[in-house]
Length: 228
Image (cartoon, rainbow, N blue to C red; front, side, top):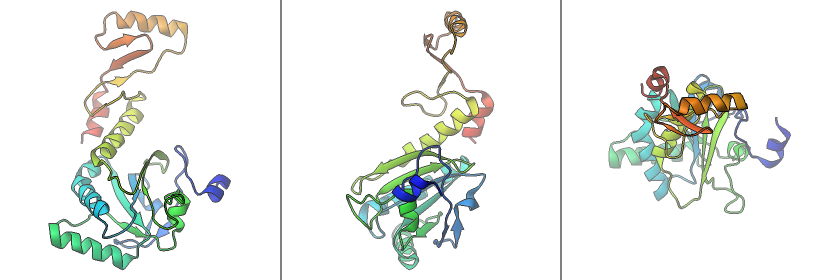
């Protein structure tokens, strides 16, 4: 195990996500079970809490869109598995919605601490609203952290997965407020010769801002993969 992870209980972007063996509402799960798929791994402070209930419903409604992106969802809190199941059933009874993704019962807090989900300045037991987007190779690509009293914007999490997959496919970048279907940013020139070539290209391109900022439409294959 990485020494810094062992001491501080924090993971970083670009790091291999730590594996675990956990009890969930859909049976035992390991992180390695998701190999070859993307994963949105998120924590919530507690079952039967108002904000978390709205988030679970929102994640459930968005689940089909994540699945189209080869992306699974996985929740976690330190509540017990019976508590998770009772909460799931209460949501189902009141809304007709079945949570289609597992929720980890992390009673000891071992997984939460391994990932840095517990903010000790706020609580020594409750997990804050962390989101880890893990790619199909098990690498942590994005970390989002929300306070206890602010619910997550699920469409932004979905958009971020789309952006990550698009940049992987195109080897380009996405601009501010990018959404699926919009142009991506071409890699900036690294030599003066490349700069001159870009300037010449920009003279005939409508999507050019400057030699260091130019846009292009994603390859059709990349767009199709993100829009399947």
